[in-house]
Image 1 (cartoon, rainbow, N blue to C red):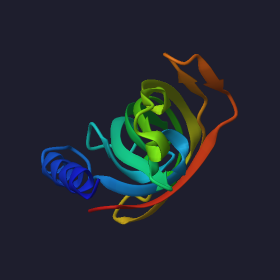
Image 2: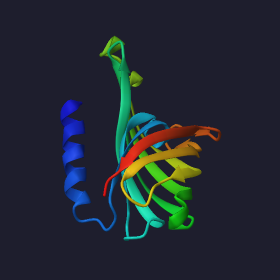
Image 3: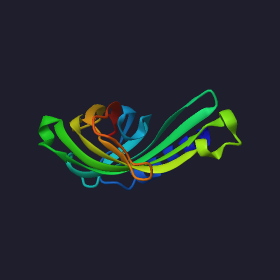
Length: 161
């Protein structure tokens, strides 16, 4: 797990050098990564408009664990000088879960892709600084026919440059 996280962080740092706007790193509780670390950037030099995110999250309890890898596109609505934005987005999250309580029972393992919408508030300074997000994130699982309409998340992060 540490190798996966380290690899993703190195990839994100390399990608951030070629992107138009300063990247953000944020820790999220809820949302597409459930409990994880995410990278976000705009696709232009503007503070608002289209952008993307990539992250990794998950947890482990008593030898069983779950991994979330969200990737998504978002759009920030608002005037850059206000620092307050409406965030609208769509995400795909790869989900992998294992139950090591009975390793012979492969029915306890899960691999699926979940869809997730993002509708929420984002505070993002024009320059470097602390960022904040709060959102409603309806989740739908394709393979297992799951729908959670009232799921949400919050995050705190830092915008570079």
